[in-house]
Amino acid sequence: MPARLMDGTAFAAKLRERVKDGVDGLRRDHDLVPGLAVVLVGDNPASRVYVKNKAARTVEAGMRSFEHRLPANASEESLMALIAGLNADPAVHGILVQLPLPPQIQESAVLNAVAPAKDVDGFHPINVGLLATGKPGLVPCTPLACLMLAKEALGTLEGLDAVVIGRSNIVGKPVAQLLLTENCTVTVAHSKTRDLPAVCRRADLLIAAVGRPEMVKADWIKPGATVIDVGINRVDAAEAGKTRLVGDVDTLACASIAGAITPVPGGVGPMTIACLLVNTLRAACAGLGTQSPV
Ligand code: NDP
Image (cartoon, rainbow, N blue to C red; front, side):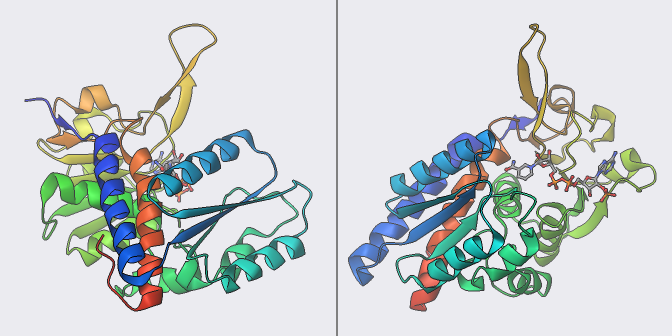
């Protein structure tokens, strides 16, 4: 039987509605409007599109969107001064510095300068530490998106064999930690893993975050497994001169073996932006000492 295709676009739309309800509640009960500040340094065209999309979704969810642009030759000091101002601004509950940054700016220094309570990307060492120790904090958006999709497909994840391919700090490691907190038995595979297909075949839940087009093949999949494809890879399309997006999973082939599978595009990607809004709402609620409804 073919796998259920998990519609990340539809799921993200529902999640954004829930965030909007939460935002409406904050405005009504606490006279507070959550605000998300996005900082863009330089004019990388892809980053410009991401920032525009994030701002549009933020406003749709009833939040305030603050966009700050610095030129490509901006100094680290000027970016640090901007972040210090946003850290102190009571109208700003979440701060996101769009990556990559130009070479004259040290990325880790900038990410460490964002106040942990406003770190909606979940990259600050304090939030990384909270996640690693299973304590509540702000969790990176793409890993949170993977967790929500996995729970949507499977309900409880307890006791499942989960395999995460990829061990980056922004996807692989935090996904693995979230799954451990959900009581999965987690294997983290990477470029030095021996016999990756055999490791993947053990997985009830397989999460691919590699950056290699359609690397995961049908005979790597345990029958009925849930497969979440984080990869975004641009490849040549059949039509000359055109390109298309594919994931890290050979979706068409794997769909005949898996129980549920996310498409690319339309899977993890839209959920990632929705999770940024979830994190902004959570940050605003935490500032009030209340529990976020989402
Ligand atoms: P990184 O390049 O930082 O990490 C890739 C990981 O894959 C590394 O751990 C690497 O292993 C591992 N890897 C590389 N080749 C192989 C191989 N042949 N076999 C097994 N493991 C391998 O990538 P990211 O984690 O940042 O991103 C991964 C993918 O997810 C990319 O396609 C990216 O575009 C996409 N992405 C999508 C997002 C979304 O919103 N949907 C958000 C963020 C990323 P090693 O550590 O040994 O080098």
